[in-house]
Length: 438
Image (cartoon, rainbow, N blue to C red; front, side):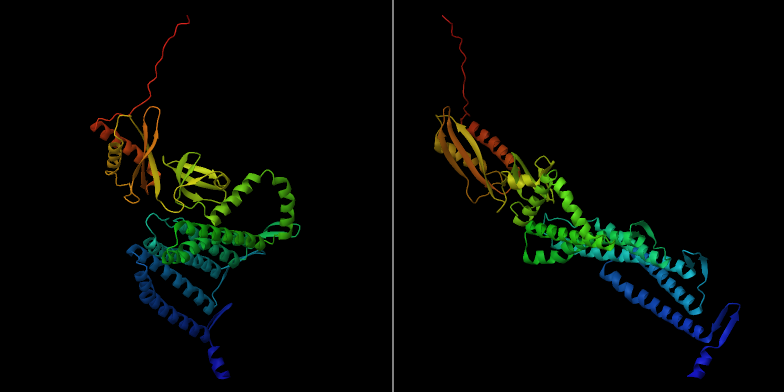
């Protein structure tokens, strides 16, 4: 063993301050062989398989291949510098020391971040396509801005690694024993971005197959997704405070004192907040429901933590505090199902045959495909009015949001049929007379 060690320690090359031994040369040779093997394996087997699974285009293939080659080459150069003891110092001071390997490591981290960014986006897009195929028509689409969150996360992690590489993690703020470092700020931002990405991944990737498999309705999906997102954000917030060494006892104590003064001013805000939680858990109003609030009809598009958004018939967005939805009288036309009854009041003259009127009113419904055949439409002789007989045409439809359009079309058809059959719509006649005083 001593003889072998002596051979390996034999100096092949020597200058002032640098010596190259046989052991170093053999180690470099092994690293070079490993680099060639890894390069062939990644380029010829690993990447083609990835391209095939995730259907990567030619432009994407070229981009990922070139980036991968640069990364593997940088790893090889770093290993070669280490084996040959060529890691020279470029800059040195009391605060920082920069070597050749530090520069190469920084470039390597940035390149790795770009590769991970491309790969993660390809995987995400593939999963999005699959989820969109199982989403029912009219369902919510997957959020598209998560790609930017993934990019920011990758680059923030790269920045955190670079801070540690260059040993520049210095306190930015120091107050009475509390210090805020660069790494702490980066970690907090990573936690906040990561919590949003986790909430998206959990609700749109992991739970979507379960929803589709068990045919969970959209309202229940939305409620579960929102509640789980709120829990993740809350845990991430407290974890971020723990990272920067903020004492929770001080925050809770200060919050208790602060809430006494602010509570009255924010009473309505807290009311809206807990009303939002009630809506999500009770589900008296779901996403997609058609509601009537203060004689304004619209479709519920979003239930937030404080307010909800309702899209009216005129394609306007009405922002309603959640407390209004829980405390005021709200008509939910589609709570149990989308089927609802519409009514058209029709006055007819006293001379008209009621049976003929009923036949005409039922005939007026036939051309409109939005009217349901079952339950069957009906005509009610409602009252003997002061100026006319009052009839009500009742029909059922699932197109609740367009009830006024349907009723308008029915009135047009009723007017046309009445004219064909010699029936006129009566109206009260007023007479004005001037009576002399004497």
